[in-house]
Image (tube, rainbow, N blue to C red; front, top):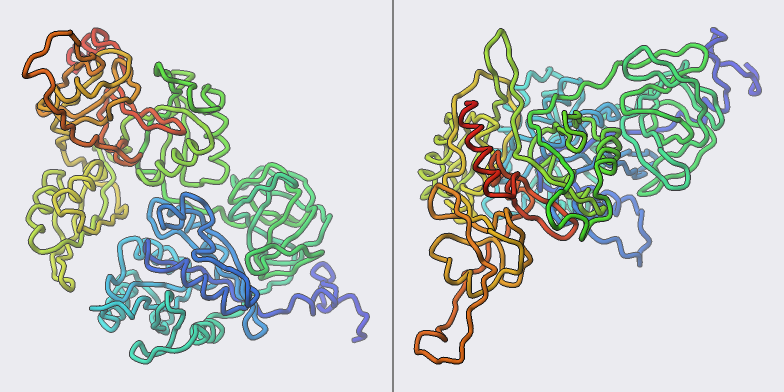
Length: 629
């Protein structure tokens, strides 16, 4: 065969130019890192980037390089799956850093399609946690091979050998194949930058882990034929618009190449053209003229694509199977801000702004659903849990949106005419002396204990609990255990309805009129409950300003000034000592409210209010609700 020959295979329709064939026969490993929240995924990726000499000797790299979203840095968790690459021993390793929280499972499931294998990272003390199990199960079902990395072996009271056995049992229980069960184990400390074969003998760098990745994971399959690229994530650039990211499973793509976009419904086809192609080089993207199968690429110029669509050959389009994402388990009402303080802090306050923003979020957030309601100002938003929805709300308020949020509701299904609700597996680690309080609190929320065993100096407990029972539970448990409990949960299945669960026991203190909170009035009313506002705060009638000591709601006036006279008396100048106001975070406020309350969210404030601000209107509505029930 001559070097200048155009074909390397006998079938003319599958012909590949030789120059492309040689250019793209490179060594590539596509790996995803999966782990529980805060077990060290992003730190490990940082060390891989440093090992791959991505930074100059004198360049400041910082920590948690991949958590570049403000919310991710503040909360110390990964929310969005991201791609980077490292070149080691002439092999390109594409690394996908994935979220560890089950609420962002939609991110993980679609990203696993891009990987050939997974690094399972577990803490040497905590072991495999519920979310680890959730993501690992998805990976094993897709037939991925795994390498176990036991991290943080430098911690006191760590137990790497026990954890290794525990993970092997987990693989077995999740139905791993013989080949998947023969996974290699690497021990080390991401923080101190070493990985080795034995946890008792620290190494000097993480090259052992990179060697194991090259030896154990197969080279990315480079199938020849017509192009097939499934869009698994998207990006946006103000210069070129929307960018489709995915793994090129088969064939070769080139700049300016006409293609067919096969929608994920498997029916709709759109003729379009690839403008530019980028591959991931380190933390940046590098533009290339053409690329062969096996590589993770970003392409521009494709109009109207969604996650799950397939970019295929113009003449013989063959779509890939659609990505299946677990369905939502919780819904919340999003509505415009109509409180007396609307528009003071936010830029986007109308229903059109709210609708456009939610529809934009649907494009990239696969696990989200949005439904319009009978009111043009309100939308029902379905998500995977309170954290999933609160991250969306927090992102929107930072972008300048104002809105109001209703009480979280779990999704009810009717299976064989029987009412079913989502059940979660809840795991709690707590000191022994507070375990009794924890069991009591979970039992009140219809939790059923599955496991209770010692784990170091803590007691490890697992429960089946309705998703409804989790709303407001975290605050109560952290209060009961003085903040020492560690909680995690994951969706299990829809099971028959467990009956009524007691909600918030205390009533609330409601502001009578609009004005500025006065220290004198707050001081005199402190025996009625605990306040959520400080002296000097602007309030309005119908706003929830505190928690009552009794089960019923109480309307109070805290804008009354002290009446001053020119007469002196011994009791007029007593000192005021006001307890600090309780400040709710966004998640705490969402869990605190009842069905007749909203959380008002603006870029600078989080307030709780009654749906009906007028006291007479609240009474009328309450009577109507009682009559209807």
